[in-house]
Image (cartoon, rainbow, N blue to C red; front, top):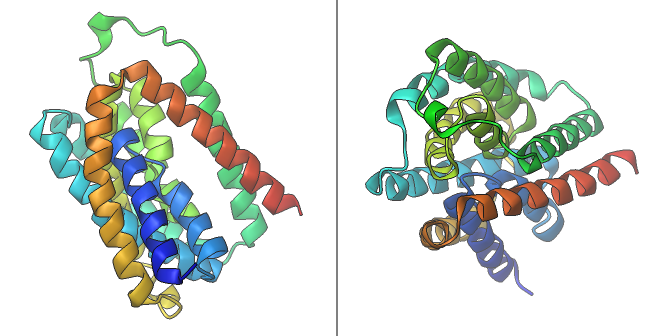
Length: 249
């Protein structure tokens, strides 16, 4: 199968994940770029951030039209992560790849387990958002985004669900704002890894991902919040297991 066809298929899957679940795009994009399209790991993480930034912005527009983005809470959450994302993105190139892969797997597994637990948050608490807590959590997620070279949606959605007590649809929509901001900040410090990026592959990949994001948004409107949450958690566990095995072998 040609690289173009593989890029289109992988891009569509990444877009659907981002549009429907508010995250998971980079988790899927990085392995696809490395194992299907032959990108070096450093170039794959940078290319993934390019793809996810463009796709997240598209999905963000779709969710904003239906009122799923909590701008007031999301703006400080995203802003707090910009400098940490840039700083950790610069530091990531100095760490061994197996260490980063194992850390990625551990964080993804913990996030998935937390999402699978029944929520103890009452409905009356759903609208209560603490700015300081949002900023602190956003800074931590920004640092992890830059360090791991991913958009961070697989961490942002659980954080919005558990730390800020968002309902699933609002967590999905608002996470896209955070993903877009953190990805752009991380990209600003990754210019040294752009040499291995093939625009003839990344262009179609990104285009398919953007189209897939619209389909993912429609899927999200038809599925229930708990179903999306369980789907997201199971996907995270599968990715965590794969990456942990890869780091240890």
